[in-house]
Length: 214
Image (cartoon, rainbow, N blue to C red):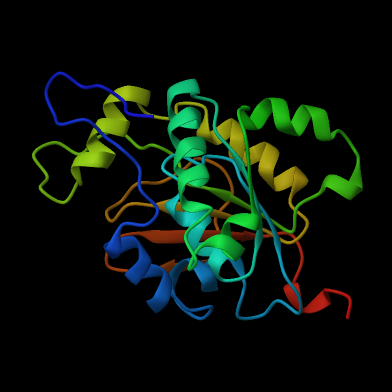
């Protein structure tokens, strides 16, 4: 699925892109997103609910690191693009097992949480949020694909509501990915932050991962 844009070349998502495959090969459980979701402390495979799937790259990394990832995307064009990319990548020998750990739904986070109700069997270990913050003006650091996604979707103005609901439904922790700078979310302070060059992860804890049953 290609999303047309009159000002930029078409955007096509390719999970077999060499740069993305390199990211998978060099990502570790004690680095960046792996540490943020708790893979350095988890005793078994984590069930992760990615409420803002977007281009799916973070979900791909988490699945590559052994997580079972449920992905939610409420935009029909972005969902279709992501589904097509997953279908194409499923035959790639380096990605076959990873893609088996990824499941995509076209659904908003609010609707998903409403459907969960109090069913503890559907409670994810970790809920991951990568909200679309307002576009940074005159910044060369925003990649073309992300700039096009920002233009298509706009900022996630309901992220505070989603965070509040996520904190009620995550078994162990909620992770919010933030760009560099002073972007802040209203609500409780995170328990800790995992910082990197390209992004930061605010981590909210409901229960220690050390309490996971053996």
